[in-house]
Image (cartoon, rainbow, N blue to C red; front, side, top):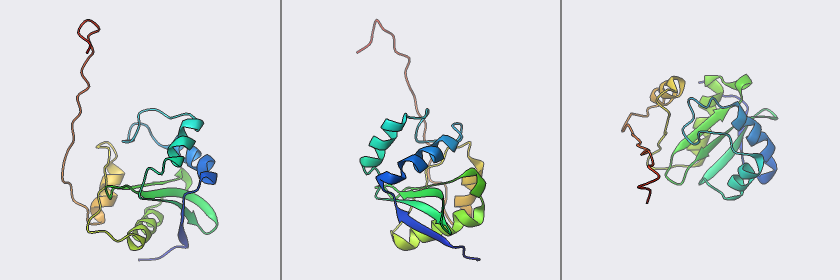
Length: 145
């Protein structure tokens, strides 16, 4: 496989603006982590909370092109800016993350509508292990507890 000049650098608070712009590029129909865009202050608070075991900015040469994380449950999340959404760049970033952070297993939670991510992770040896369903009951104001 061809390797690219991809580097991973730990996320810092100074990356907030880049990460926010990246978040705004996400298609809400395939997002799994949130349904609406937080405001910038909420976003900065999220970054400060150290939500992931490892969180990196992906650099291609000297350009920030995306982010990749490993959650505390060993779940991988990866997103590249629209101009850089090439599978070979994503592949190199995934390989680097796994190399830098050896684990017994890795997971990837993917929205069922995100067919591209399904293919990507399946191609990389991940297998489907569950479907998750959610029920949000309608709240009756008379019987609300």
